[in-house]
Every structure is written in C-alpha cells, then in structure tokens.
Image 1 (tube, one colour):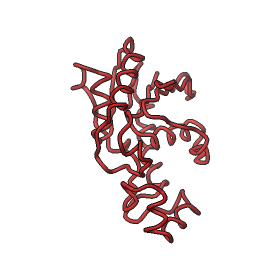
Image 2 (cartoon, rainbow, N blue to C red):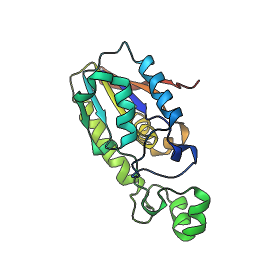
Image 3 (cartoon, helix red, strand yellow):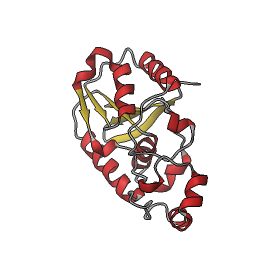
Image 4 (cartoon, rainbow, N blue to C red):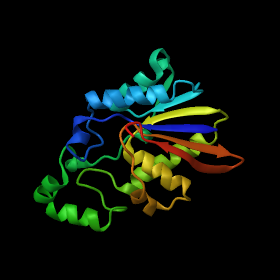
Amino acid sequence: MNIYFVRHGQTNENNNKYYYGKLDVCLNEKGLNQAKKAADFLRHVKFDNVYVSERKRTSETAHIILGHDFEKVNIDSRINEMDFGKFEGKNYKQIKKMYPSQWNRWCSDWKNESPPEGESYMKFYSRVHEFMDDILKLNEENILVVTHGGVVRSVYCYVLSGNLDFFWKFASRNGDITLIKYEYGNLYIDSITHVDA
C-alpha cells in the first residue's frame, strides 16, 4: 500500500505565522501554485481512495490535484488540523501578550495542556491514530490524504512507534508530498518531497 500525504498549499495565515486549525480559509496565490506542482508530481498515480479534511484549504488543494475526479473523496474530520481555540488567528507574540499564563502552561506541557477552548495534542493525536489504524485495514494500492502540517507530523510519530517527541523532529511545508508505504506488516516513510525545492 502507498499512502500519499499532501499538506495543503499556503494560505495568508501560514504566511503570517498564525496559529490556526479550525479557521476555514482559502489558499493564496502561492498556495494555488504549490497545489499545481503537487498535481504535476502525482499526475501518473491512479488513486483508489482519497481522504480530505473538512477545511477549504485541503479541498482546494485536492481539487487541483484530482481535477475531474474530485467527486470521489472521503471527507474525514479526524484529519482536521488541531483546534487552537482562542489562540486561532494569532501569532505567538500576540498569544503571549493576550494569554500569558495559558501560553506558559501550554509550552510547559504541550502534550496534555490545551489552548483555551481548544484541544490538547493528546486528543488531536488520538484521532489521527484512529484514522491511520483504519487506513491500514484497507486493501488498496494507492491512497491520497490531503491534510495539514500537524496531522502529517503526527503521522510521522505514528509510523515511529507512537513516539510523540518526534513531532518536533520533522518539518512539514505547504505542498509537501510524503509517501508512506505499508508492506508485509511494515510501515515506513519512503520519501518526503518539497514541491518548492
């Protein structure tokens, strides 16, 4: 099984380094170009199944990659980005100024603490873990998953035996394509491609 993970193209919120997961925003011009590059890279792959988060930025990216085949997608809330609650739409300087105690608690225990009215990383990882467990039960050759940076990095943790500290050991750029293979009961990261490289 080949599982192709694509992080959505850039948005203005990415460009401004905002924390955002639940905010439903569109791709900017650079993001549209990144999606086109991902589409070109994947043009020869015939996908048996496609999964997309609930957000516009992933559906826009998937639409560009799939073209006329866009109807055959599964929208799955488990691969939505982490919900940052009241931190949404703000950069870290703004958050530190507006919510100093909550920011410090979150930084000191990022796995278990959650932003005000948001979700903890453990809750977030739990739904990504459940999604991956279900994907590995499928009997299909090529699967496309268009999702978010936090989800992709959590999938890396899943592949690496659930070691959540690996979350900070990988980058995930807008438009990146990660190929994860599942063969003979073995799950591994085969390649990570930067479309802007």
